[in-house]
Image 1 (spheres, one colour):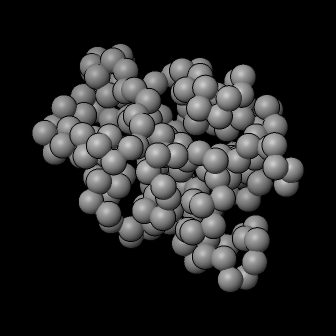
Image 2 (cartoon, one colour):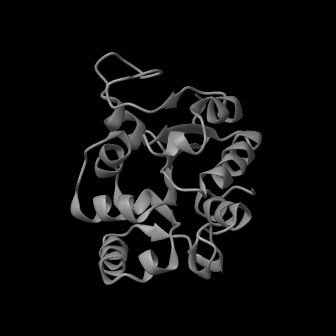
Length: 188
C-alpha cells in the first residue's frame, strides 16, 4: 500500500442506521481510501457483509478469530486492524457500543478493536432512540469517551425508526464524510 493512501476502519454496529454507512464506505472507496469494515453480529442483521465487501473491495471482518487479509499469521486481527488505520469510524454507534467503549468491555470483534485503538483516532456517530440517547447512563458514557479523546459526530434530531422525532438520529453521511475528510485532509 502506498504511504499516501489513507486507511479507515469502519466499525458497523446493530442499528437501523447501518444502511447509511453503505454510502459512507462507497464514497470513501471512490476517493481512493482503503476501507476495512468490521461488523458486530447484530449489524449483519441490518446490512449483509457482502454489501460492504462489494463497496469497499475488501474482505469484511465479522469474527474475532477469522483473520482474512492479516499482514502475517501472527497479526491478531483486533490489533492490526485497529493500529494500521489512520482513523476509525464507529457507525452507527449504538448505546451498547458506547457503553462497551466507556467501560473497556471487549466481548466481540468490534469492541476488541476499539479497545486496542488509540482513542484520538476514533470517531463515533451515535444512533439510537431519543430516550436511550437522553438516558443518564448514555450521557455519562458519552462524557467519559469525550474526556478520553474520542470524537462524536452528532447525533442529530429528526425522525426515528421508532416513529418518534427527537435527538439520537445518526448524522447524515455527507456530514460524517465532511468531518472525516477534514481530519484526514482529503476532500470527500
